[in-house]
Length: 201
Image (cartoon, helix red, strand yellow):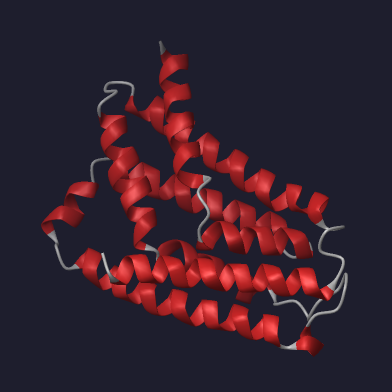
């Protein structure tokens, strides 16, 4: 019984987290560059754990009572995604900034973590997915909702670990500046697409 609940949580968590998004694109890029992969993976997974715990703990009701929280987060997220997309496009257009194998000078750990935090916590989708959706589905498995939550949290750790550390297998593909430019253009388009979906929802 408990195993099936854990697997259900793992399945829902995986189905939500594997979708291409701003956070995944950032983790992939860090993994390809081999920069601060461990801290980035841990931060993403720990953030998901915290948000899932909030949802399963029933505090998602607060967001329904305080109605202004979601709209404010939505527009802050839109602004951040537009700016980050522009920075990615600028990287792609600067021929001197990308060199095969090394690319531009990497960001500091603090800057990388700050960017990761912003991509995670300023994205309204993360609250809808982890807090509201996973939280509400988990409560449907009461009194075993925390086992469901554990499965969803495990999916987060597995995915970010696979994405961050598995990205090195793609490094031969990204051995040329052109491949990095294509990746940065794709990241910019993903960011702007998410921003547009939030803005016109």
